Image (tube, rainbow, N blue to C red; front, top):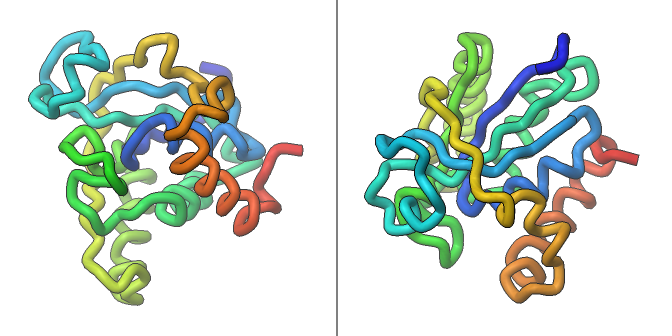
Length: 180
């Protein structure tokens, strides 16, 4: 990893959705879709689809903390998925679609827990937040066809009906954080 860069690892439902969001942000160098938090070594998409491996669909973000902070990434993470539904995002149902933050250091853990506590106190979502904060484990990169999926398949039904509205919301609410 380049000097000065940091890594954030988020599971917020379908990794095609979360990847599309975070690729848009200034200060984000790379976003890799993959699997984390399970027991199977070198899982495939087929392996994790039934939820038996324990893995979550997740993204690993390499970012420049001088351009975008972990706190800002958290804010965007919570604004672009539903952290109140257990093992579900919309019609995507299963443990692989859970909301989870995999922290890579103690600062990330503390920030994530404090942010969730603040949103809980303020009742931000009107429902309890079910997002789990866990130590990062081995992250397995998903198959090539999952990488940059949205940008290569924008006209595909799932992309146009599920992902495009999330990207549009990001562009409206966080326009000051987007790449030029």
